[in-house]
Amino acid sequence: MAADISRKFSGDLSPQSDLRIVLLGKVGAGKSVVAGHILGQGNWKDKDMCVKTEGEVAGRTVTVVETPGWDKMSVKRTSSRIKKEIVNSVTLLPPGPHALLLVVPLGEEISDDEKKSVQDHMELLSERVWKHTMLVFVSETEEEDKVTPFEQVKESTRDLLEKCGGRHNVLCGPTSNRTQVSELLLNIEGMVKDNADDFFLPQVYYELFERTRTTYEDREEKLKQSYELQLTQTKANTELRKRRNSMDVSPEFSTEEQKTKDDHGCQKVDQETVKVVSMEVGKSLMIYNLNTISLILFAIIGGFFGAIAGAQYGPLGSCVGIVFGIAVGVLVSFGICAAVSKTTDISPKSQIPGMR
Image (cartoon, rainbow, N blue to C red; front, top):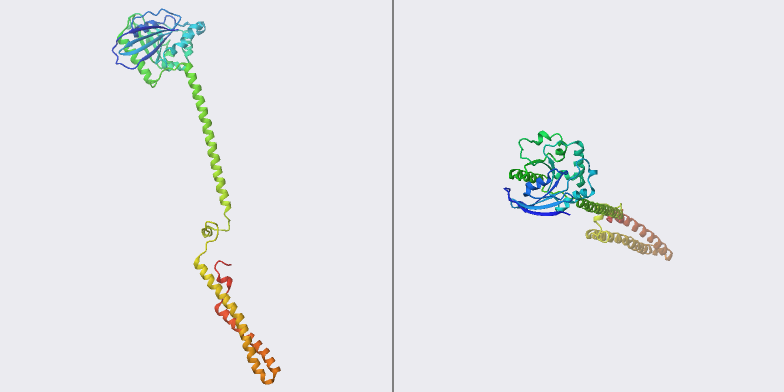
């Protein structure tokens, strides 16, 4: 639970968007002093719970959450309730604080055990916390010129400064100093800008976000694998169809021969070829018929002349003349047909295109 205190304070910074700040540190570190510098004088007396304060600074809303102080020697000695308040502090500034100010008393030497305690308490919020953390050295005295952090606490806070990326500020005096506050807020703005205007996301939200992101990435990876598998199968099926189509074409046919086929796979017919074939077939038939006709004709003529020639010898001579005439006619007919065949040089197979 957090106590709410509302205040108004005017400064000399230009108006900007709201600013959300969490103050952390050991018991007695001076967190209330820092809150007073930023928002004006206030009374933060509750030491067991977070205190949330909202004010107006230079025309913009600034919200500060002060956390209970932790044990300076060990995180184990800090009560579970205090640790729970520290963890919950960042959830009081949704969606998350812009800056976490680690308050360190100015001029105090910090032992190794104290530094270990600081690190353990800060990392209750996760290791990501350092990216959004700034060291604030605070003193309730106004002797700023006599107390220089890089002379008295430089060595003892070197590790913490490195974790914070060297970011630090100094606030001196029990009351608000406008110059110091302006410098602090400008440094906070610079840190926010360095973080790409991002804020610190509380661990509970960060884990939820990471689970959601992981689930989404896993689903995206599965969809990608499924798509790649389907693409591979599609390519394989396409290649298989191409191979099958190529096997359907007879290897005996060349590309030119395939061009001579129509859409139904039948051989295309050339009209000129048909005419030539028809003429050659006609010639062949004519010569073939001429052989038969000439054979009969010459046999008749031979028989006629043989009958006339043998008639002077009587019937027997006429019969012999007929036989002899027919034989001579047949021989003459074969001779004439042979001569005609050689002259025309007709060969049915050689004269018909496309026949072997």
